[in-house]
Structure formats: C-alpha cells, structure tokens
Length: 288
Image (tube, rainbow, N blue to C red):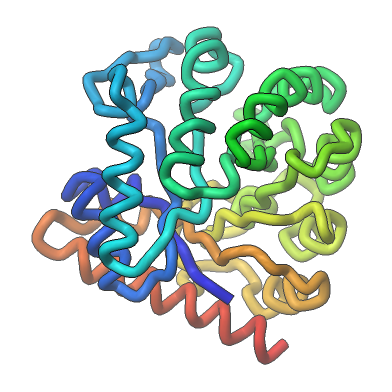
C-alpha cells in the first residue's frame, strides 16, 4: 500500500516544485496535484479570482510536466489531483475543469477529484459529469466525485449535501454507470456531526466504487483537516473497513490545516509528521 499527500499546504510555504521534493524526502510514495491556484474562489464575496499562477496561463501543461519530472527525479509519482471548486461557478466549469483533467494526465495522475454541486441531486450531477467524461477518457483520467457538506447555523452542525450520506454517494456513482466515474471518500467529511453516517459505513457501502481517499482527522463535528491520530476519529474502525473491502488505492492525506502552523523554515518537519501518520494507518490496515 502506498501513501500520498496533497501539495497545496506545503506549496503555500515553499512553492510547488520544492513541495514535491520535500514530500518525497519526507517518505511519501506519491503526490496529489492541488490545482486551486488555477482559479481561486473568494468565498466572502462569492466570486472567482483569476490568478497569475502558471496553471492559469497558456503554457499550463509545461508547468504540469515540470512538476511530474521533479517527482520522478525524486522517486515519486503523481497519483491523483484536485480540480478547482466550487464546480457550479461558470468560469470554473467552462474553462478550468477540463484544464485540470489535462494537467492530471500530463503530470501522470490517474484520478482527478471534481466536486459535485453541493445542492444538486444525483441526477443533475450525473449530467454534469457525463459532459466531462468523454474528455476524461481521451486523457486516460478517471473523475472522482466526493462527499460534500453544508452547514446549519441554527443547529451548529453539518447538513446534507451531494454524496454526504452513503446511500446518496452510491447513487451518484451508480446513476452514471461508467468505469471512469469513481468515488473519492473524504474521511473527515464522513465523520461530521449531522450527516447521519460514518467513515466505516461509507467505506463499506461504496465498496469497489471507492478508488481514492482524502485522509485527515477531526473532532467528529467540524471539518478540521488535521493530522490523522490527533483528534477523535476511530482509525482502527476505519482501517478495518478499508481491509474489509480490500481497498487498492493510495492512502492520500488532505491534512492541510496541520501544516498551517509551520513556516518555510520548518515545514519539512510537518511533512515528515504527515508521512509517519500515513504509515501508521497503513500498518493498522495490514494488521486489521
């Protein structure tokens, strides 16, 4: 079993090129290509912000090739990616999702995580994914949908969204009925208070649909994105569920908030911490 982590939280300190080098030296087998700088979203003003990042320029594939080579030079590969979001924003949907799929292929990744529209049904989201699937197939990249959440301010807890419950998640994948649409389970999202499910339930329900993970820890209430084994999630039960379905994918961390307390001088320590936590989960799965 191989381990991976997203590059965004490290790149905020040192840039993508150096981030991949540190991730390799820290003990990871692969890197998850974060593409949020392709088109940032201002949640406060509810509007996209186009950037000067290389991924937003005309030679974006050159940048993806550069990152792939840095990984290979350091002995690791790109296993998956994460497209910009929210996917209902017109410019993101019309311009940047196919670009994200292209960049995934160019970097060597096999799966591109593209969020569903939080507030749309499986049927409506199916139409959205079906528009992208022919292009994804041309690129040889699978699309993974992900379990989302909304927030109920009155109850101070999460509320339902696309794929937030295991039944709806399975429906999102099954209604498309295409080998190129798979599931990426965000373990932390599955454990948020108010969503009437758990990560082990999600894993077992998804079964072979599950081909990618976002791994992080929380207090089983908020979306904390902390390092595994630091908060309240039951990692023994999660490992047992992954063992039960014979999960074959990468163990990919998305514990981006953990690295927010580090800086350019010590971020490598945080990367090493993350790698050790991923190996701990790997050991639990083997011993389950």
